[in-house]
Image (tube, rainbow, N blue to C red; front, top):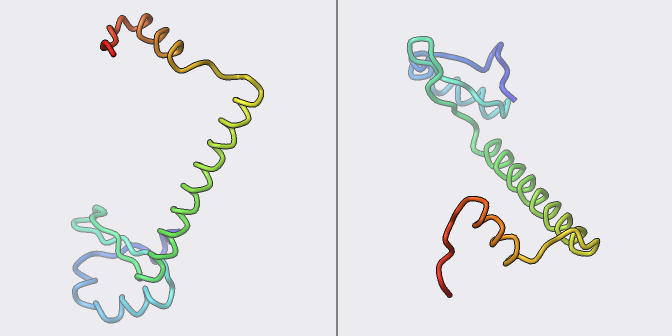
Length: 102
């Protein structure tokens, strides 16, 4: 998570003190927002910390997909579903869409 006390710096300072800033990024694992004229422009982060973040995001996506599949299977088992053709026909009628001929 971004630390607003030490997680924002200017691009100019980053250019002047690149080695020191990179050492701090490696040590903390925290991202750093770089600003230009006081406005956030880019975020830099240690590669290992970024990899952990990317893996956590992938796990979260995977868990959402698994949960959605389980919900769908539970709906099918509890007969809370409708045949796809009938549902699509109702939607086509509702939105006045002429379905293509098979």
